[in-house]
Length: 236
Image (cartoon, one colour):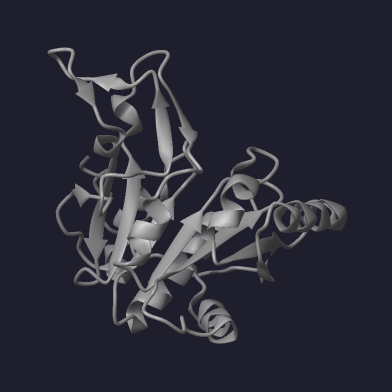
């Protein structure tokens, strides 16, 4: 178990609270895989939700390696019991597109929104999404869809939207989504990669219209986790 309570509380204080009723979307990204960006995003969402007056959403935008919901389910002592599976879109929009489109057993089209679910934690103060990638058919692909109304719609129902994207060395998601976010936080870990790659990522995001709010040095403190029965996988 990784405990970043102190670090994320400091980051939340540095970023300040949203200044309007419109929810704030923050994207977390790293230049290299293995820098702990998913852990940082999850820990930030946990701390944010503890003080939130409105729901905090943790969006798993790593479309090829979904893991946020499973990670939260594996720590019930920190996130509490999950609520039921729910739709993860206020208006039917989503931030990705399937190709070819899904169909049900009768051959009728299935909207992309049916492939995205969420489960609530902390008495519905924290919502964590998951792409139902196990439902994808052979040859079916899923890609980010930047023209979606999803982010604007979700802002009306959330205090914060925390977006976890894959590292820049794996995908271009950060550059694609950056213009749609209110801010971007770059995660840097100890002993990983070169500073030039971080600076290049910063430049790419800014050139795409994104706003860099800062860089977080991730030197996680690992604490012993008490033995317990394995947590069940997410029911989707």
